Length: 353
Image (tube, rainbow, N blue to C red; front, side, top):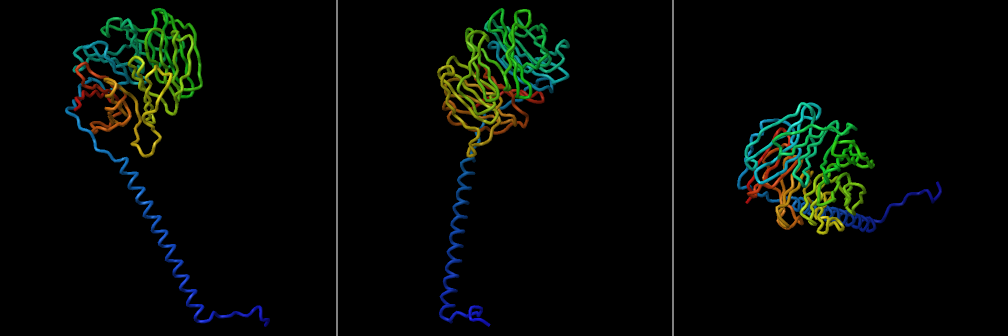
């Protein structure tokens, strides 16, 4: 056999040092792995600690009798005493709830001419109320919801919001699967003036003063200052925007992924106060938002949660949970209580600390 093929044993002293090096190397690797595991474990603790929060407590939560199990989509105070809620069963029944004692007791009305759900609730500056929904159906009240008149926009779309910013011009918005929307202008006889189509979904349209309206939707906010003749995109995105609360130039905006934005100049500049995609923050699917003043506001979620801010929206805290039904809309009562409405005919009156 050739010498190059022979196997040689290490001398005893060489084997000793080799084993020593091997043991030291294994110990070093184990120490590094233990250190990495410890760091990873501490990071997890920090992450979950940042998500953990102390729940706020209500002074009082009262579930009111709505006399219905319909889905309740929008709630709005028309005056200090009169409050209106619109909703229904999507393809089976329209629903209008009305309170004349500040939101304590409710009566239910369903118009057989409009046999499907009402999604939008808009109020014009002259006090007229418009509920809009499936098949282009619109219910209109000129007497604070005491009586209703049926109208239909003749394109048979599903309208999620609308109102008349001027006596001769109404703006109504529809959406198909959050992929396409139509902004429809109609005259006082509900005849179509014109329609604009965009490749994104919309969720509502809000009045904001003479000739000015805001449209919100999937990653989009648009504004018109000429009663809907032209629309301009605003520089705000990053969520499917579900609700807006307007106080002059101060506007708060919330999205389904949990983001909250604020502007102090009517939307020329938007600031994101809460990032719904931040994994260190609690996950909220927001459907409605309301501010009592420049500091104190609340938002409702689709799993029954209610959150609050007392620093203009920069930080949010969660209340004790009182329902698992989706809360779709929120309003502030004249006495400062909250009214929230949602699925299964649920209405809650809440007194906060």
